Length: 443
Length: 183
Ligand SMILES: [Zn+2]
Image (cartoon, rainbow over the protein chains, first blue to last red):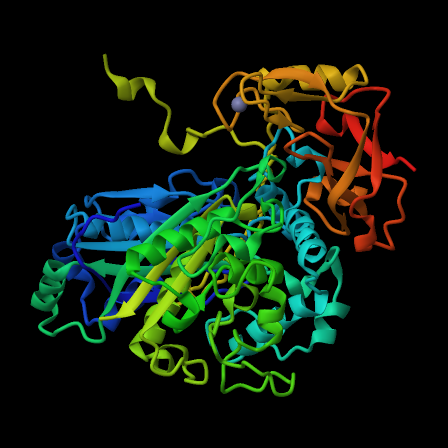
């Protein structure tokens, strides 16, 4: 795809509510307001100035079932005092937040808006965990898939079994992801689960869908997140309102999105979609994507890299925040994003490459430790996964990484990636149906 | 006409009240208004149940097939792409597809043992989900596998031959067919 030159888009500020299993003391609107107010405060913008500074918004939440409230988006818009500015809600399963971020980007890049607020939330605590799993499973074909035993952990388990069969990936390699992300989150005050785990802990925890255990799977959360995007002209408006220059600017330099069939049974077995640094001969006998890989994730990566001018992601990106709803999907995503070849995801995590260089994970010396930190925040597995907020949460963590402001915002600079200049964020919906990848760079 | 003359005193006007739904007696309330923001949230249970009129639409022959002991897929007459789970139109070329009967015996493409599940299926755990593959069929089929020990899952199960069996009384759900070991 040829990307036409559009306006530069800056990601100026963000906020996150503390993710928790339940937030019964508030309904969703004040929860979003926590994240929104934080983002305003960070650039010194007064709430009453928002009307003159902001041109509109995009709302992100996945499930009407979870809140049993249709049109929740407009209820946030009015609560934040953003009516009558333009807005719309986006929905793309687990990738809703990633899509929201990109729609806000497009509003600004296209010139429709100079400033755009992206906000999202999910309240998953209003039903019990297993009813929640039932709701999520309704995001599979209700004629053919859901009634067979609709359960997303089961679907992902079938995918990783195929990955293990195809490439020799091991359950211990999956457990590495859980150990890494939980220990990273130990230093992130926003995270829902902050634990020092061992490979053994992960394998010995309750089996949910073989081979995935409770600690291979993210939990459900209540939470909200918010980001503010602006053009050059938008920055001027912010400057005029606050009397100061927005500092530590980050630019969005690439967006990509891909899709795949809802029913896993419908996924083709064809040829690998190649990234710039790969050759067809790398994958002579591999049938693709089959059940083992995410064609949508590969497509999103390819488009985002082309847009941002990235030829070799492992060398040209400094860190990644990716959608690890399952340890297995983190490993599969390393491959989709071209951080390693298809089939090498298990070895990639075992090598230590996606771990932070400065942390002790209780795994001894890892040969490639710190080469490409993945989910320095702790990811979904440890931070939580309030669906509509998740993709925006990743964006905000990436913003703070690039600003070098992790200490200020998460209270600990242990998980600050040193001298980070370019990061990628990756948001993913059910079994890889919608995936977004966006590239952020220090301006 | 004088409306007031016809209306009873305000305190005598009552909306009819019933005993169903949430009734919480003696809700605590602070004496001072300034203390009210510290009160705990009120959390109530709201039941929600609905019967959907779900049509299988163009996929209805599949369910009629199951009720008659036949597992049906579809095939594209134009490009020959073959669907193990029916699609009424070909994803490859857009043509309308034709129904055909799938082979009785297939293989496990992948599987899992679910020890937990959505609430509706919790009582059935542990159960085995399989994606079934057949020779010369391009796509797969999601089903249950029974007759295999759920306590000993292993990668050796991938590739195992399995065959379709049908419920005697169809419930018009995709689980009217399930798979058992074929050897
Ligand atoms: Zn065709």
